[in-house]
Length: 539
Image (tube, rainbow, N blue to C red; front, side):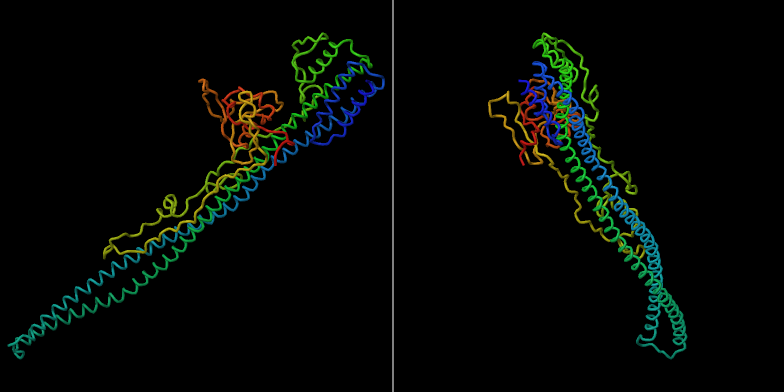
């Protein structure tokens, strides 16, 4: 018997000593626990007592440091994954430099366009004033022409009527007066024509200058519209990239957190069991191999060690009676524990804030969509502020100018919908098996990233389960009339993990989920997200 125990103990110790990183040591630890219990019960030879000393040394010097190293490596791995959010921020900061530059270019074009339209308005006024004055000169010329035509008609009537005698003195005197009036009026017509002809080039120049100015301004307007479209397109791209990077980083971290929570639980259990084993081995050493006097004494010794180093809240007397016992040990803080065994899981980082203004797209903030050509905000900001252009009806008192061209809309700028990432497989169990017939509650593999189910969470140690009271959940009234608050229904696997991790919990395994029955939100009757052992997962 003792040779068998020694061989079993040696095998367990060696298995623990050489076990590799991230591999559960539960079989070896359990074998060592059983061996220590049997040695305490049956006693041990001096060789076994000597072996217990070596085993204690190996547990303290090799096995437990290996467990701590695994935990430290997992924490480092989590921290490295969490640093991806800093990369997301860094990428955004770099992209914002492009957005900021495009905004400056757009604002510069806007200012240039505004200034150009102001100059255009001046040239419009000059052209209008010139045309009004030209019309006045033309009107005076026309009036004098009409006076001249009237005089001409009188002369024609004087010389041409039948029966007149053009040789009389009266005729000659009258003709002289008419011709004198004609010559004076003709000189005035010539003056008005000359004034008109001299002023006309000035108006043609004003017209040409306005057309040239309008062409320049229209070109600036086109450039401004194109730059505004580029600016908004970049904002859309930056926001889409940020959302995509954030979702991918969170999905990866979420899945790693779920996996490492399971590993942390295994390590804690192994550490606790090793502490109990060390306690029992010390008792064997103290008894120098002498067997316990009774089964009750063995039970009491085991209970004592478990109460000191495990999660039990009771102690066992020698007769096997359980009595209340205040817990004294926690794997991360108690005597013989190590804080490195309890990992720090970062909370989900809040989304970065939106930038306060278009001119402040600097650093770690998300640029906000800006007005684009042809929308109402664009008109208010870029067109309504320009000088008013004369409007119809046009006449000699209201000459027209060049109207502003119609806006040219951007190509369709649509932000792609947020993309979901599936970095780890999801499984569902249909309610609680105890509530139905055998085979009615299968474990179902769900690869679709948009697949949905309800949420139940387990503590990291797997001792407790929670179905309600989650932040952000909804109220649910059960068929019996009770109201459960903080329930989550029909969410994706990633969303379910987020809910659990935010509560400091993890997804329940398919084995643990049965302990969650009747814990609220009527989830017994719905599909529930669960986790499974890595070796049992489907690809």
